[in-house]
Length: 540
Image 1 (cartoon, rainbow, N blue to C red):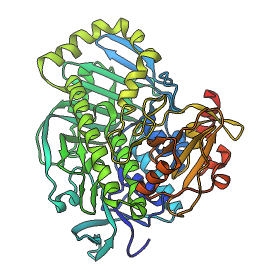
Image 2: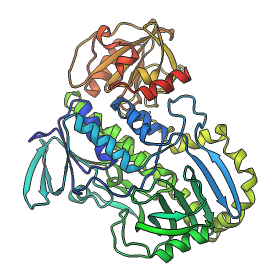
Image 3: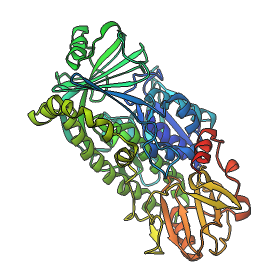
């Protein structure tokens, strides 16, 4: 903890914790505050996508996340009287170490990230709310108030507003919050069930009234219920658990869905109001909006937590690097210019999927209630890995690229391989005589420069807070140089050291010597991630 941190993160959900961890890993002094006193809250997100795991891998938390999750979930689709089984264990994505969807509770994600921060000496300060904000060109000042009433003004270099849909930070900046409420709501409950349902399977029922999910990942009781239905109104904050749902209404949801179960103890239940909105700006001076504070949408397609984490990975390294950059504002502006278009497209995707899943309009209701059961016999053929791969790539945001970004320097146009702004694919390469995978080679914080076999040597100077590691790929012929950003996107592609140096200066990075930076992949991971190493070995 420091009196004048480089970054003050407001909100300790997945987006806030990732922002703090990414900034800390790249040299920033960080404080993170959370108005909730208790760490636990009911999980609203349950799926982690491949791209999210890739982005978190350099932070050394993926092995712990995978231990808590299920990387090979199975599902049973209840379509009328028909039940169809499918598995999501391997969706045939060959350019990633994580070719699967992972069933993982948001509460577990938050705990793993908070523990990783604690290990870096950055505890989450709970029971602390941001109640005021002012800024000038030099710094921002946030007034913090503790549960005991004590107030503290904190000056900092930047504020990351990760405080959810009802963001205090966003309201303090006056940034417009554009969108509207949905006519549907979500019902959540943890409960005991007397049934023959397999507890190791995600059960999904589709009907005219919407979708009902049942899975054995409850946090107050064995089973979690998630269902959509027409909104009952109310004034609870959007996205937050509202009023409890009476037991008869829970039984009715399960009966209408066709589940032959008896409801026992209800540990807790809640209605959750939904909206889809997008902040008019993601940056206001020294203030940045991340995750649900910047964009919010329905839970369809499992985008909320994953998109927030990817926002955080994008912003977290730029805040400390900007201090060394030739053009700091170019660095900081790139966050909004890269991530707001992505958020807009995610909003469109989730709006479309949610319309199909939950809308009371006659067309989707007919498709769910009448057409879906008729298609049940062909569903297994539609869920083959080769057909699921493009769907998972879409949901996982594998399509995201920043080619038009000011941080994307393309100096070798027309050649094969990812262009500046693209995600770095995971491929098998040889580095220093060792066969490895690209994502294993780059699985530590910092910028990574990949030199083809005949590329020029890169001179070395070191800025401690902005590490750059240099790797020579002897299996890649030619003179090409590729610089990979800390968020896994290519920032530079070219053949001239002068052009590479100009890009490093633009983003505020400096290169370590090739002798000390090019290491065996085992020592390049911080800390060693044995689960992902095993995945790499299997793919190689």
